Length: 315
Image (tube, rainbow, N blue to C red; front, side, top):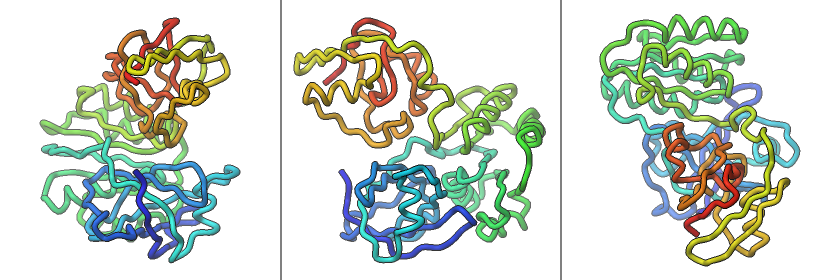
């Protein structure tokens, strides 16, 4: 459910990134968020998008950072060009698929706008005195520099500016391909290529359960592969829908007058995740973990398909 809210303040964080401080219209709708949380944002009649929260200690407010994308009709473009203090929008309550937990030591890795959930984690670890180091790769010298000044002076954060992809990868080897302190966990957020490199390199020294990531973009190639027709059977209603080669399960269900909650429609947010009762999904999302995909108990209806002729859903 989306809640009425208002933008209270905006601030330019970098040449292509803006801060938006948002307050639910009804004070009782605000709840405290944990590091790694995000909210859904809907404004100007556009599709809903998810944005990670930072500055979590500001009671009554949610603060997000939005990188401008010039994609036609995109929410980020509308926020950058139209939204001002007083602009009304709709938001969800915080959700968290990227929890910090209680690591004994943490390696925090961020690239570009991926700093937002990582910054909230760094703030909590610093407040609780947990050993950690934040490595932040960016192109804009201004982005989050002031907010990280204290951590940099304490030797708990390092900034890397203007590196090539090859230089970033080499630096990740220096950071990750080493012996780590016991119960070290890695938390990372950034573009797809950066995330893939983190997973590969961190996996050399740490168990997969100690490497945690959040993606802002669909996995590269997630929609590739043969597009076969198949059927979805809705176990609770008894409805059967055929999914054509050129449509998603979500679209096919809509044609059958079956409404399912959805948000990003890119396999990132998880709003349309549905339980699978029979059949084998063809997972093409960036939301479910590798273990969840192997279990084949859930499927993202907006992008995934089916390896089997029929997929039975708990709908």
